[in-house]
Length: 339
Ligand code: PEP
Ligand code: MN
View 1 (tube, rainbow, N blue to C red):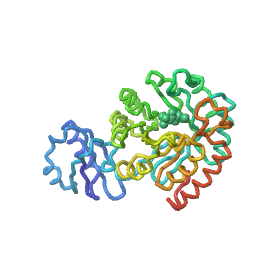
View 2: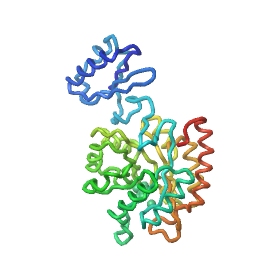
View 3: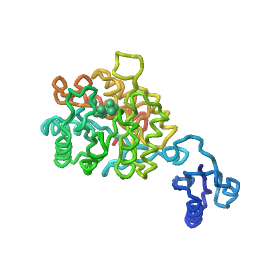
View 4: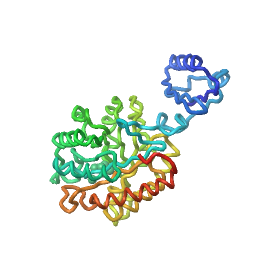
């Protein structure tokens, strides 16, 4: 349920109404927009007499929210959420590019990629340390050593890092990681999501291979229900009957999610297509569709990559992508911050 307050509602009135609602066992989220303040009410709202609430002087209107996702719902928070990563921002007018190899392979590899991608416009460095591979015989990632390498490169370059977690027991290793990624295969690992809800760190939540947008939003809701509202959603392609591409990039997910939720939405054109040649057009299309950012795999030597070489861009190819993406940003959001 949401209660839209009148423009002239005072802080004192808001506080006393909030306290009254909390006494009735509800969790109250306050969203202060430019025009309205909205109280988002979560819990058993059947105990609330809507007519009584609507009759209060400071209340403009009361609406039931029928969707099962509440905190993630744009009705609860009409303005775009802006997530802060150190002094970077993503969401609203802020657009960010995350780039780096599929897997952390060595310090030299990560350092060279970090320098080249940051020179061409990526502000955030990606690299998998724990890799969810289909085959147990494939490279599983450098694990803890991979995280150490990312953090060393973060120290040397100042770039924030994003890397995937697969097991909540590994959380202590992620203390200095800037964005924790939940991969497609763990989107519905609800116990992991609950643990991430206890943090205040930004979470990059990737859509599962065969999950609906509603399921993605419900997974975000799991994290938010624990108190962590710093979530970035990621469309990375879904499984369809098509086999020429690794997945099918569901681009309409971007405007659909932007309508349904206030959370930032980024697109991963690398895993979505599985094909180097398709990354540039889909990165451009995602930007045109209104994505708040991109996450792109870049490797200094894709042919010899230990993972996902076929979809990895060289630093030169990546520079061409960012140049085109920035031109499209200029059309989608003229005057807005490119980074
Ligand atoms: C990744 O980003 O490295 C990854 C494994 O992606 P996804 O979970 O989308 O497959
Ligand atoms: Mn990969």
